[in-house]
Length: 318
Image (cartoon, rainbow, N blue to C red; front, side):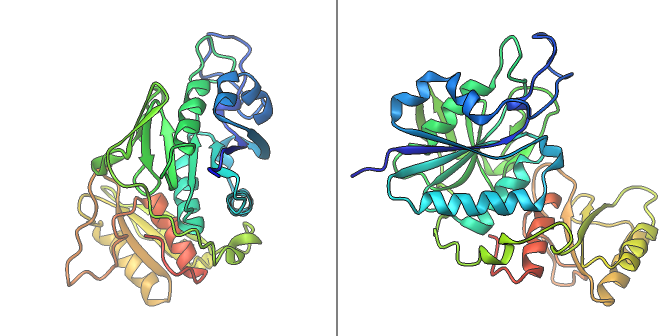
């Protein structure tokens, strides 16, 4: 029997936000509407089969934390183990959506689709974008053969490894960079352009993060290289006991000499250091004589998550 039950997990965000005026798309309070209420307002969701909702968290995604990530990963594995579940949709704020998507792909590697979706306008807007995004996400979660963690926004399907928020305001705020989209959702139909993210469905190491808290997870911070950069911030982080540092470097991984010297001192002291780039597209092309390892194509925020997982003994994130 083909699985047909769709699970929708709510975490808050703009999609669940409310404003005092229907014409105010920025002066709203996020995470005010429950996921069950959001789903009730989209009757077309029920046309494809049974829908189960669960509120995992209710927060503005700028405040996303490790405990919510661990809870999401646990619930994803629980639901996907049920044979009648075809896939999962997660409603999420846009600010840290790319980080959550990357984390869930790395930890769960789901063999069924896990689709994060969002909104750039609150639920109270005159023309909210959330309902259509949820419908599109559901179409992907129900699509035969879909797997892995993806993000659906404004009709575009982005892979968890590549997706980045690229605009502060417009409805199609996300980009997959030069990797290109996984596909599009057009009038409820999925048009696939490239492979879905890998999905082993093992979840073997979930216990390593299931009890993670803000104090028990490795401390990994991000610093940026820029004109006139100094190394004092790195020295301060080392003094505070940081375990890892990701540098958002200029261009192809170049770092201001003063900042680089501080990073090399940190590395010599046992701190794990990685180089990413602050450029929106492309990735650092490594050279044999690089003193600081590159992030293997990951953006600074995703390189931070990868390094945290590595420090926790995770077997790999790509």
